[in-house]
Length: 257
Image 1 (cartoon, helix red, strand yellow):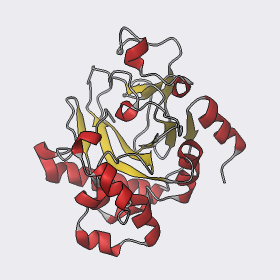
Image 2 (image 1 turned 120 degrees about the vertical axis):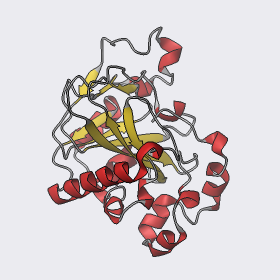
Image 3 (image 1 turned 180 degrees about the vertical axis):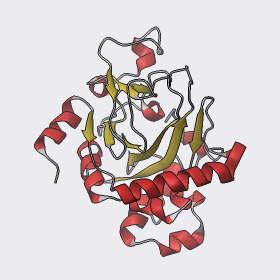
Image 4 (image 1 turned 90 degrees about the horizontal axis):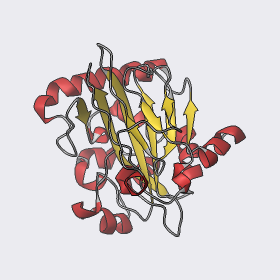
């Protein structure tokens, strides 16, 4: 169960900030393993999904260390995701994004996967795990509250997706904070004006009948799949023929995330 004010914020604003969510030991473990993965993967980091100029990216994290198995199935997190997506949803992807120091290019305002709510409601929900402090100057995320309700993409309404928006809010917080976002809300990363990089992990969820951004059954080692508990198998939809149908085709998987 979640607090009524958190539910109201998700419903009305499209996001909620959960302070002190990540245990310090888990936080250190995530940062250590992600740093190690960037060193191991080098120029190929993020290549399974997307590489991005000005930011280091990692994809398919479920397959890259036991520490990540402690994150995306956290019941506290899933209770908040459930407010957006209902009772039936799945992990769509688990990625990391590290904004380089002095990178001056913002992301355009977007909705994840270019998603517009359909007759069944919302179908994308993101969670941003702040592994470093998010400040106003080191590449925070800006979000336009309430835009998840519009049923439109920002490119349909705005002339300049990089320009400041009069209603934008900057999502900032201490390392260990998690933000849950209705990912239909318009949002985008801002420039990093500091001399240090800024690291986050994104646990991204989709409604059960929509494609995964990264088809987990195809990406995860069989040994790992065989070792997972029933709850995690269900969240990854490893035994779901419907997900095999909707997620197997790469053309159904897109988005800026």
